[in-house]
Length: 210
Image (cartoon, rainbow, N blue to C red):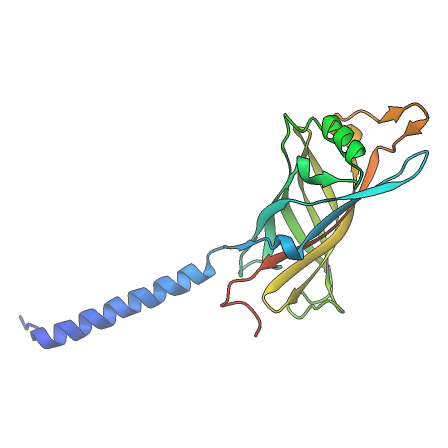
């Protein structure tokens, strides 16, 4: 039986270890990657119709992340978003306090959304930009007032250097979440609330455009 000289065995060991580390890096690169939400570059606004006058508002405190899987098409298929109920504002303090009570904010400090499916319906998501966004069908679960309901809609997506931008609109029927219609004297607020969103997710440096 031939033995390998010690100096050569060290070389072989070093080569084998290096190869294993390289293969591990490749495997890790293919794993799903979490893209944190950039709150400063994101927005969520809502619009309500009322018998007296329409009004609008926005969320001022939210967090979340998207999951990027480079083997998926498109790579972002899932995301988690949370909005502080107390941060929802219509820019009028008294109305905000009533809205907080209506949403049972003490029992439900957060509104959350779980993105569960994204399907490309138009454009090239690999080359999309703000002027030529890709178009998607999106669906997921919105938790409001402690009630989970599936919602669907369309969204636009594109890249801006080290950010992935997802923007769109949807309608939320508040009656489906156990929230009563607001009626006060001659004021009646519609139960369908339009949501307009623009979310910015941060890409890791290895995927960011220079």
